[in-house]
Length: 320
Image (cartoon, rainbow, N blue to C red; front, side):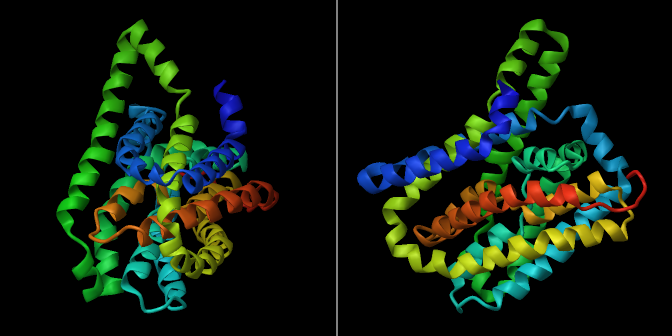
């Protein structure tokens, strides 16, 4: 069942997005679903973290060349690309904030499955997930202030960011660790863990449904912002994987590890960053619409990545 869900996850996501869009247009009260987004996100992250074995988290720190390439591509190269592309957007503080919030944060959930489908080393990405998460949460406020200056200072309050980080990221991570410990010492715990292992795709689909369903009723007011951000996201989706591949070559990674860096550089953390965006005063409707737009572009791009990236290769060493 898990293999079936992962193999057809893109169709599942697009089907739920289409259903949410139609429902949102027909039922204006769907906008009230925004209160369910945070619990659904917490569930999605919990079942995602549950796939990361606690002993393997330490291994992520030992894969030094892969980790170096991953950090450089996501937190040096990708931010530079995002800043360059930002110059093609209007001088609108809320729009620019939404674009940067999503482009500065690398994905930590479904990128692992897409990487696996694209013959990348998904294991390396999986063990690096907590590192990516912590680094992006630490650097995001700094990058936003650096790139937006006083605009960011007027829009961002650190208290909601810390609250969202604690409730939606740290708590699911801790709960996932406790379930893993239970599963290690109990047959009942192992059974529960196996059942929860079926949920990453349904949980991600639920989040997409809620986000799109809650956003569509107010999308008309933000359609211009979404259309403005669209070419920027497409450009990022085209350029970022090539830059990630280039960084992997510099670090002399083998082909599967290089593909993993490329997938990570191209895939952004739109769903996880959404509650942080909603914590910004006056976020609705612009920020959710801009972030959902990037998610849709990314899902289409991922279908292309899993066909193109397996055809490219490099001569390199095993990461370590």
